[in-house]
Amino acid sequence: MAVMVGQWVALLTWSKGNTVPDGCSLRVTWEANAEPDVAGYKVYYGTSPHEYLQVLDVGNVTGAEVPNLTAGMRYYFAVTAYDSSGNESLFSSEVSGVAGLDWGTVVDLQPEEYVVAALREGSQYYVDRSFQIVDIPDAFEGLLWIKTKNDDKFDLQLEVRFSLLRPARVYVVHDSRVAAPTWLSSNFTRTDYAVLVSDAGVADFRIWQSMRKYQRGETVVLGCNGSTGGAASMYVVLVRPESEAGDLHPRLSGSGSDLVLSWDALPDAQGYRVYGGSEPYFAPESAVAELSGVEYVDGGALSDSVLSRYYVIEALTGDGREPLRRRVGTHGVRLNVGRTLVSVPLQPSGSDLTAVLGQVLTGGTNALVADRIMKWTGNGYEMAWLVNGTGTAYDGQWMNPSGSGLSDMTLQRGEGFWVEVRPGHSPVVLRFFGEVPMDSACAIVVNPGLNLIGNCYPVTMAPAATGLWEQGVATGASNSREADRIMAWMGDHYEIAWLVDGTGTALDGTWLNATGSGPSALRFEPGRGYWLHIRNGQQPRTWRYPNPFPGR
Image 1: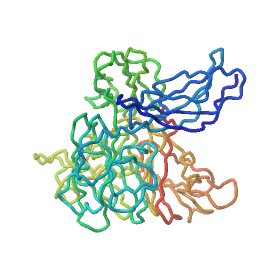
Image 2: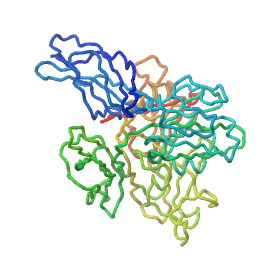
Image 3: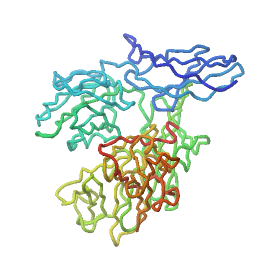
Image 4: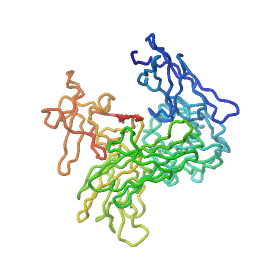
């Protein structure tokens, strides 16, 4: 049998039962294989890209309805073909769709003139403005969406309130021109995703995700946008209904040289397995531990000789269902005295400096002696320094440059930033802890001029594999003086790679070394930061940095 699956036709429709809360379904269709010995097809699906926790053997048909899906959830599907001997093909290409929305999720919405709708491209996104949504990240299309009122940006006493009749994750889609108010940055994490809108003065509306899942019956309270006028808009809200069953919510922490991995207990779990590996997307085959509890200690995993370690946690239900898995890890970057360009290679538990950087840096009593973080804004640096030795509650906190208040700086995947270890302080290993990103790509907004960027994933990538040229983010030139380029700080000098373009030869799309004598050896290393210099652009561009192992 030739192992091949026909081209997908469509995700046709969804349906919802009148009385069953999780009674939604999605219908998938595909073209039949040409081989005469095809005996049937299997539909694989799950709620994460390329991570299929369930499978249906649907027989020799070219379409099937997948039942018992959670309303509002996005599901990902792939199909295999098999013959009478049981030989099974590789997966087809993946498609996804959102199960029917449970409109009863959001009740008692205040202010009353706000509207609950389904998020779609082309929709008006305020109740009092005609601006439209131009582009939505796939993972958010079709979610419950609360349209707000643009003029409410002037109401500094405003509270947006609504209650939930089922567990849900809440997202605030916030105008990037406005500094995040405290209620938002304290309770939500700024993601790499953005909604693009038709208002010409807006770069994007960045999506912030709630740090926890809200429970059935809980009231969600959101504050004002913090703007008194000028170039600012009100935020909008997304709601993703979630299953009652819960999640593992894995956590990593250090205890000396030992790494402690813990997670939430699942009510129906019969036990847990932990797998370990040195590569982030390893195949979990032999468990390093089988546990009835919710903690695993890996002795010596945080020694200076071990920079990276990765784990898969597996919850066993014992009822025939596929186990729930989460993939987490730690990645270390060695910091010497001086400045190092760094980026975040994992998805940490939060985006504030303490959540991302931990406790390994050395503070001081003032900004001149403390280790500090510097993030490029496009025309200057945002800076924060670590307080220590004052004997006050500020010890261990990150302050703004003047020391007049705590820093509100956040760090995200895809951003590069400087870490400066001051003279007299010890070199350290800066360790990032978090979930291994499973998305297919992360979005990085690239502006004309200098951009500090980073690798979105904990794997080494050549510039040619990142889509910079193919996506039109970098265009280059026939010489290094005019070409877009990448610059990697080596501690005392920059290594430079520049892009050949516009020559009409096979060299177009090639990254050359500084002299142009050959291909560049520069690579995007996980945890390292880089300058991306766009010399030929006039407008911001969105770069979808690809994951080489999506959903593994």
